[in-house]
Amino acid sequence: MRRLIAGFAAAGMLLAGFALAGEVMVKGSDTLLNLVQRLAEQFSAVVPDVTVSVTGGGSGVGINAIINGECDIADASREIKSKEVYTAREAGVNPVQIAIAIDGLSVIVNEGNPVSELTLEQIGAVYRGEIKNWSEVGGPSRKITLYGRQPSSGTFVFFRDVVVKGEYATAMRQMNGNSQIVEAVKSDETGIGYVGVGYLRDATGVSAVAVRNEDGEFVSPLDAEQVNAGKYPLTRPLLQYTNGSPKGDARRFIEFELSGAGQQVVKEEGFFPVTADYIEQNESALGK
Image (spheres, rainbow, N blue to C red):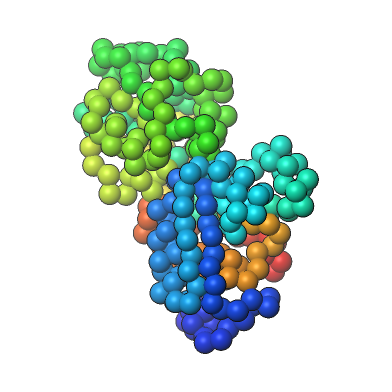
């Protein structure tokens, strides 16, 4: 690690023909926003001549931006769709995927709600509008209020495809980000929402429910060991996409994210470091 940091800090360092001074534009996932902003701050402390600008807007926004040449790195909380790959190839863009963290996507309720465990089937029925009262899943006799993301969000897509397996109920209130969902459920005793696990790090007033996996075990997204072992059913990688294998300052930033120092930031932000299978995939993407 000391050699890595020293290498980053070395004056006049060049990589793939790019000078150290420059700017890296990152755009996309709201789930990744706080994490990547913090990683950018730590990277800039080591490499002060490179500015990393990070903005949100949703995974779809980020992927469109990398296709249109509007950013260097796209943040995404879902995998790129086949039609997006086709559009990229038509534009002469080769999307390369890198995992920088692991998320236990968390279903949250107000801390005053006694419901602490749900199955994926129950959660899906709730978000399709088929289960409308908390009494149907062991809670009080109160109407359920749904909070979710907007369609440009990768989390919206992931949750719809993996959990809802259909269309969201029209009554779901679409929020602009994870933090808004946390605040909404905190203020609403009837509320339910879904957020990246990192947004529970300093959250108060909400609780993450345990979700039943294929083995019949109820697992909390806050259980790092179970998430890393793939035992939590809503485990997912948090991704970045570049046009081809990353080069120059963008590569330097990604390598920092994947370094020991970068993965420590991942843990501090409440997410989980990349596991061995993703490390292997990352090395392939980086041409190592």
